Image (tube, rainbow, N blue to C red; front, side, top):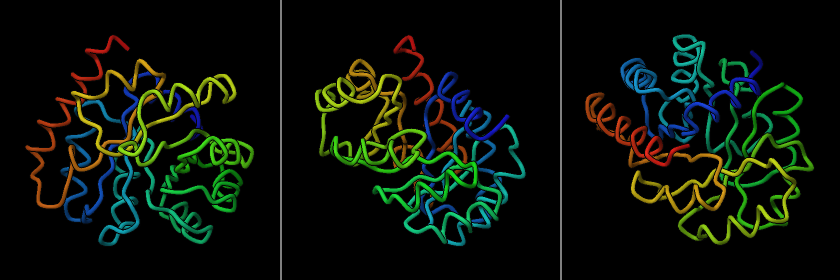
Length: 211
């Protein structure tokens, strides 16, 4: 499957992106395995993590069926670095047209961060695969619902920031296509067992929505 095919398959099975900020290459094997075992197939290592390209390379090699890539991608040069490491997913906290266009040229999935309809339409025009509503704490399900009313039908918007198993319901009801999950799932120092426990909780929370 192409990266886009893998992304849409992930959205149809478990549309939760594991945001592994602070992950080290030494931790990547164990953390990646428990996440995949729990059902996660969308894995993101932010570039402000220690040696992120090494972690991305390991995860991509170990989990060929998953879509692995980077978060906090700010420049086209970084897009090329992630691609060279085997990553096929580009996630940003902001919308930068050059980043989106570069990712698209390389056949990668790109989810730029947006907070307004203007940014959302600009990102889609540049070729974004979907949109990251960030920070979700600064928005609300009503904001997402209003955006989706004017965005092209089928636009995939994923809230990121402060998402827990307990608060996914209102966002899902408003039309969220999935979520990016950060420190509630993984943070530096957290053991693989703890990550496995919390991953299972997120999966159960999503399944409980009947999605």
